[in-house]
Amino acid sequence: MARLLRDVGEHAWIARLVGRLGAAARDRRVLVGPGDDAAAIRPGRRPLLLTTDALIEGVHFRAGWAAPSVLGRRAFAVNASDLAAMGGEPTFALLALEAPGRLRTADLDALVRGFARAAARAGARLVGGNLVAGSHLAITATLLGEASGPVVGRAGARPGDALYVTGTLGRAGVAVRALRAGRRTPWPLPPLRLRAGRLLAPLAHAMIDVSDGLLQDAGHLCRASGASAEILAACLPVATACRRALGDEAARFAATSGEDYELLVAVPPRAERALAGLRLRLGCRLTRIGRIVAGRPVVRVLDAAGQPVATRRAGFDHFR
Image 1 (cartoon, rainbow, N blue to C red):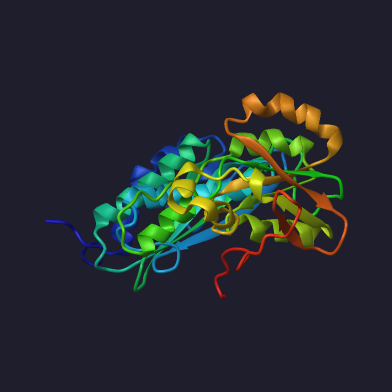
Image 2 (image 1 turned 45 degrees about the vertical axis):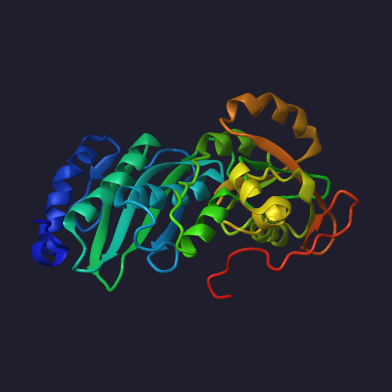
């Protein structure tokens, strides 16, 4: 019979988890690992990066969309994407969980295992966290990372820079739309662009991860940089699944759908030759989709004739 969280209790579950995560204590960088009031780590000499994000049932996903272990892997990946966008790599992680008492302990175990294994594959350690009771499942992760090279933010794009994006757009958005409609379909895991981010950082004026939609996140980059962007609809690397599902509307959808977790990069002209030499090392596709231009911070999508393409929204916003 499956053991429920309300039968096992908070402290017993945490005690079991701490035993399983004991390997973190063998990492020389970890002074105090899971199970104490706080983790203690030995920082290196590189710049430290911190990020946090949450996956909340009913907001970011619904029950049945993914196995618990996959939810754990996803929680790690969406946070690692923020580090990748700044040229960093993860080193340590904290995981805070809100869970209903009716949840099976085996499912919570699998979720944490999925997160911890994803972290380990990326070179990071899960060193602590928290568990509280709640009406639904919520997963909040905090990652600490390091940058081995320059730390790249959103604010450095300049007129004349070329805009590039990694990977493809629209696959996750099409899947989420199908899932929300009640159709069974795989929910793609976010790609890990840590290597690409590390290699692109020395060449980039600015970089951001595409989580809420290409146009939405390009807008963030433009506002931080005090410049405008022109994006060519015909150049967008639209995912095959998106083209099959939406046909002529695929590019417009892919520009705003979100959950791609790719990297949008502003690269100065002088760096484009060096960028060409990196393509085979990035581990993913890289596509030039537009440019940064002078002007107030707006993002314009243009068709092949240079005319504006109308879009109903820029991307995801929790409150709109």
